[in-house]
Image 1 (cartoon, rainbow, N blue to C red):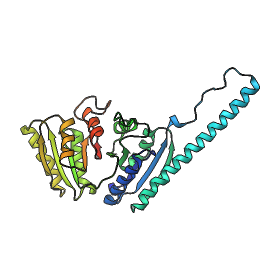
Image 2 (cartoon, rainbow, N blue to C red):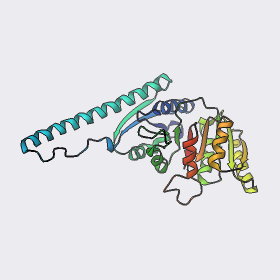
Image 3 (cartoon, helix red, strand yellow):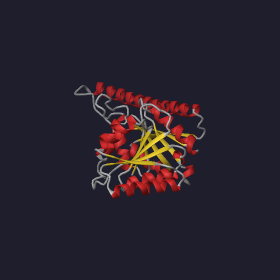
Image 4 (cartoon, one colour):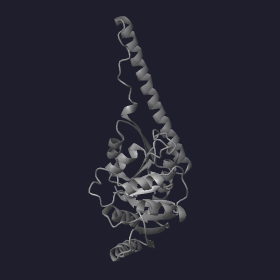
Length: 287
């Protein structure tokens, strides 16, 4: 399967972010001609609970109660499946209205990481909302599934913002690491970024090595027909990048999922986590 026909995998959970995930999937599909696969995962925590509520009651009553609980469990499982199908149908209708014609839906039981692993070989990008249904908005918590997917996925992960806004101006955070280089290479090859204004930035001191890295990144993009700007920002990435996104009104941030940390396979880099949490624009993460 060539990159041009690889699908966009969009994870929808019925949360506030689901509509935004669909809108962003439609935008990517229109620019790349890629089909969209919508996936809703019924997690293990949504399976009927196996707990004995009967207590120390008489045998006949206990048997009747257990039968009633089993029936309630079956009804609950059916309702959860119906809800999952309704979420997928709502998501499909958003894509239909946006003009996307090649749409598939999949309702899956089990773990979301297993679901992504099954389909990501044929995916060009995995879309997920910044927060899921259970996230605590007041405390700014990221969805736990988001962190797990970024750790596990070998494809770009597109983290949708709360609402879709037209995208024309893209900031690329470049630290010279492997995942940052992959991000530049991906941008140079993908039709998604054609015609968008690209700005490559490194945060830190403007050394000769840093300047050469930026020039190399610009040269790779130029060879692909993309004229990018570049700059070096003083300060710490967590604050400098977020401030630049807001003040210069960038519509999207692209960055490596991890920096040079040796423990990158265990945790998401702190800069990455902070950028996802604080940025009000979509973030595309490359491993």
